[in-house]
Length: 250
Figure (cartoon, rainbow, N blue to C red):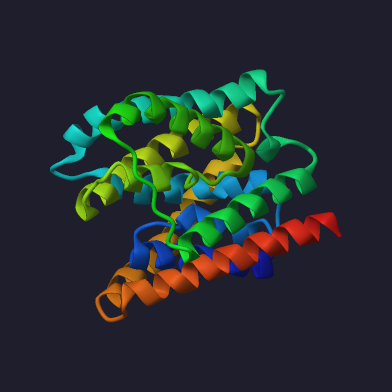
């Protein structure tokens, strides 16, 4: 790997970790969006496996983790089913397909949608009765989107907000969902031959700049209004998604 490419990747993970440190999410969103500019989505997703798993696992551990696991397990199972079903029965995920343009378009659309929803502060409400049947469906859709783009925020994050979780429980629940999605995605990448020993080593190295960026982000979070930063984050996601779509079509 050339030093220029190494520097770009390192800076990307510092930035992605920084965003997660400030707002509590966004490492794969930023990482996939920026890395997909210089490499294929499958390569980007492979590099993100270890940093995403470690940071999400850290976020998922808390006093309320077990009660939240008992509540959200249908969605978590759905995520695994969605990811692995796309690989086994969908003719291979777009993420690992040879046609990188289609994968980039899919990723760009998801990023743009995620940014637009965030900027519009769209909020949904899900009743306890609807939660019973909607949770596995949301999981399957999230898993399908993850297998196609490497991003697992849509629709899992809006759904977890919609079921009325308080701030701390919401952070824990997203950590649980993102951890499960990361593990299932790693299994898919391995089965498709996109995550091999060399990729695992590079992903482990990428953990270092990600943790550095996350530490910086947590430090900044205590000094900068998080709401302002979130607006900037969603705006960047929207623009980055639009750029990926337009670049793939041109």
